[in-house]
Image 1 (tube, one colour):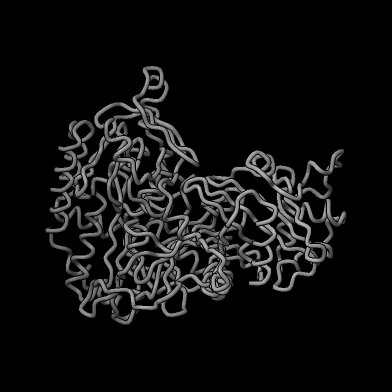
Image 2 (tube, one colour; image 1 turned 90 degrees about the vertical axis):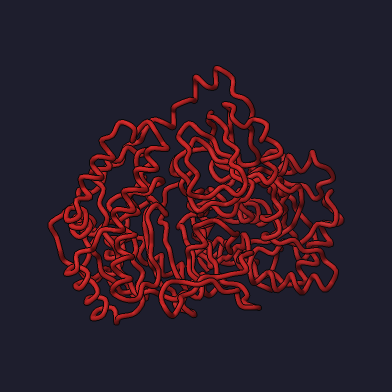
Amino acid sequence: MKHWVVLAVLTALAMPAMAKEQRAWVKEVPDAATWKNYSKTVGSDELGKCIIDVKTGDIYFFDVNLFNIHADFVLGVLLKQAWTRDNIIEYNKNYERVKPKFILGYLTHHLKINKWSFSFWEGDKISADDVMRTKAKLEATFFQKELPFRPDSPMQQKVANEVAKRGLKIITNDEVYKAAEFQAFTKGRTVGKLHVVPAGTAYESLNYGRTDIVLLQESYPDITPVAGILATAFSTPLSHVNLRAGAWGIPNAGDKKAREKYGKYDGQVVYYEVTDTGMTMRPATPQEVKELEGKLANAKHVDLPQADLTNKKLAMLTRMRAKDVVVYGTKAANLGEIVTANLDGVRVPAGFGVPFFYYQQHMLQNHLDAKLDAVLADPKFKTDAVWRKTALEQLRKAIIEAPIDQATLDMIYKRVRLKLGGKGVFIRSSTNSEDLPGFNGAGLYDTQPNVVGKKEMGQALKEDWASLWNLRAVDERTAFGIDHHQVYFGALVQIGVNATAAGVLVTKNLWDTTDVNGFTINAKYGLGMRVVEGQKVPEQIIFDPTNDGTKIISRTDDPVMLVFDDKGGIKELPVPPGAGVILNEERAKKLCTMVGKFVPVFAHGIPLDVEWVLEGEDVWIVQARPYVGQ
């Protein structure tokens, strides 16, 4: 077990001497005041820790403000041992099923739902008997009674099923997550005009600006840049809307009762602040308006890779490197870098890039470049959102209706037949304005799934090219100071994997900033589009590759899944009865091990945002880019 390495890094080698040892721990917590002294707030939870000596039965509630982890207290106070490798290995035996010396417990007050639980580290192989023993000891020494056991891993869920039969109450992380009335996604504060978006408003009608704060009453797959977001329906930090808000650095939260609480401010300029445990919304004072108004409206500036419009080659991923971003765009180039690294066990579906040249050819041959220049040059483009939306709609329509160069289509279709076996393919965006440090552009451009046939391929390419000029993409690029004249569209044509399940992984624990090792993983059954759309709660776990710990955050509540249609495209089917858990320990470990192999390929110190699919028990990587968020 590698846990000792992490512990050694996270703690000092020697504990400070204490004049009054009783200040470090107590053997009972009789009231809320004592709890406050020995616990601390992390995110939206109050956390405390306890240790039970299995030989004597003594319990120690230690001050988590003094001792960061259980091992600090066990070695520094109870055993008075040095931080050596041998001592840590011996200590870690207490996470096995048979505890040689100690039971290592956690106590949590879930502030957002005002409920309590006791639990154990997700890698702890604790037995049902020791869970019951912990419960009995807490009943005698802790001021909160009838504490439920909260299993943190699939392994502990099996133990929970057993102790539940003995009468112990159980609460799951899934229940905690879904019961919460409030969820903070991006902390911060701002001022802006509040718009309560009526329920049933079409996604295409979400046309708001950088001085607007929106109150959404349903989940949307995306939104144009705004000053703040508050939603009554919320799912995951990895949805496109939440990723976008993190990149913009705007306050963003979910509150199931937001309409009742704040609807009265519709149309007013409000002050909006989000913290870990709550939010504030009220009419803004003149001083707040002066201090905050317009700060977010000041465009950032992102430099794009200079596009090479001369290269005509349809390069396979096996012939592509990161430097080829100037020809094929960042999505294809990033995958090419992974493929050409030839890492053992890393699987990427075969594919090839359609370079910027052919997008530009389509624009020039059909005189669409002149239409684009006219739109961008019109003064109303910057000042009139309604005009801009209409003009862009007309431009996209013209791009799609214009004939594609037949020789180009023949060449692309031939490559699909010869190099990709003529199977259904995904035609994915790979522009020079996405997947960049500081600007990931998640979900801005279109993907056409399971494209079958030459005519359908030509149509799919044109629809992808046209998506370069959808409103949300244009407004997003404007917000980051990107020159629209320098934006070009490449496409990645890739064998389609008819996924059993799919999702997103970030090489960072988005739920606990103190965790330096955890990976956040989201998953749903079927193809992965539903995960990032944020329409339903996905399965969410935190996996620690250093010790194979699997912490459950939520289980998916989506009753349907997307799969390939034999005739091309996709269709919706019910999730099979008894489908069970997607991210069990074995699959999570396989996925994280694979991702860990190509993390060094990318910039050191920047978390990666990875899209993956599961085909049976085979894991495939379909995208990797810098993670942009808090």
